[in-house]
Image (cartoon, rainbow, N blue to C red; front, side, top):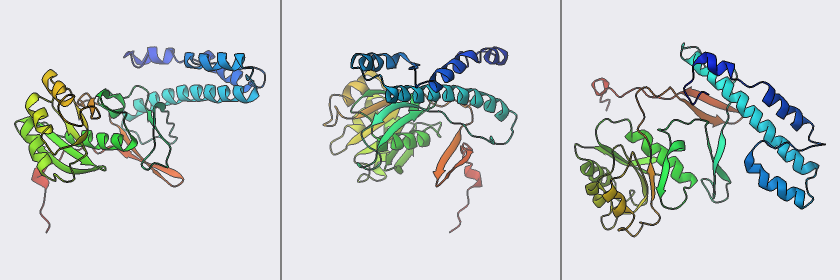
Length: 291
């Protein structure tokens, strides 16, 4: 209902009470029955019945997933009301209820011995990494997603044609220019050694001239994120360079000025630090040289 842009009264009227109550009741009673909450579970449930392993342990797993569904639903309701309070400028919530859905299981985390997955918010903004579309290349890694997010966050700060080059979550080049291909050339020239095997963020549709710059000999790009690619640029990037089959080409919407205020979270031992995302534009007139 929220995703359809319904009004406040309609949204509140459509809050489901009976459905979650029935699911919770069935999940609580999992010793004697199994509760199925998604069509994606049908195959495993049928297989368990055919293999005669629809036992209490299996039903406990279904109950866990059911409680997760109702918890996510309640968290979504809580988030909606919190957003209403945010519009009035009230403080951050006293209780923070977060709900994320697993979108991808990743091969490993920051290091090969770490498990990892990519979880996304319900109704993630179209301008976020969670909503970006992969058009080409190998599956994304944990480190790819970190660098893509950093490159996209940096490059979308600029109104002018801009390119950012990211390596290990640090910018090794960033440039603006009237012509997009010049912005790429200048950004790459900032540190050509570190730029090898990097992630590139671009805030304009990539044209053929820029793609040709990207494909010059001796350069290697892991992934590119941009609002789009011209037909000629996409053809070149996926057929010419040696890394053509592996390069991850991502497409994402540019954030709008009216995009809702997002929160930043950072985990510390035993807790979570929360702050408003820093979206204040840079004011060059206020810069000072202190050394």
